[in-house]
Length: 164
Image (cartoon, rainbow, N blue to C red):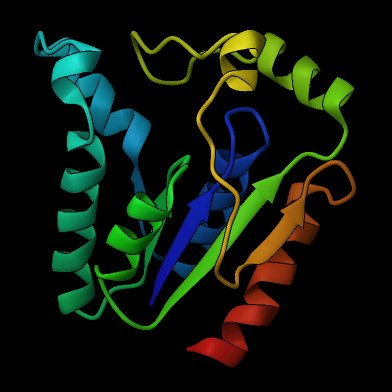
């Protein structure tokens, strides 16, 4: 099973994805970690482009072939990236994490601390300016303005039982 997370920075994706991966004993892949390793090796953001997503998708595919459950933690902003993840393995389950309270979302973005050495989180304006496309396919939407992370994980687990 591949669980594909998506959502703007600061909505709570990483918190929920990590908790879910721990509960499932799953492989956890975070594109931010992969991209920061590339930056640390001297690549610019322009040079990295979509490589972080491609590397994560390939690692996910290898782990799925081994029968492992994989949780992919990404912004996943476009249908192109969403389709790439779907092609990594089946069955898959998509979760879009949102924060419907813009004041709370902004507070989270502006108060976050980097948990990856050298990683710089986007500013609130960069989050607002992000090229994030609306969804055209089914997914579970988790609103962290109304659900604490533990409850969100339980909701996801309940839905996963019917998929896998």
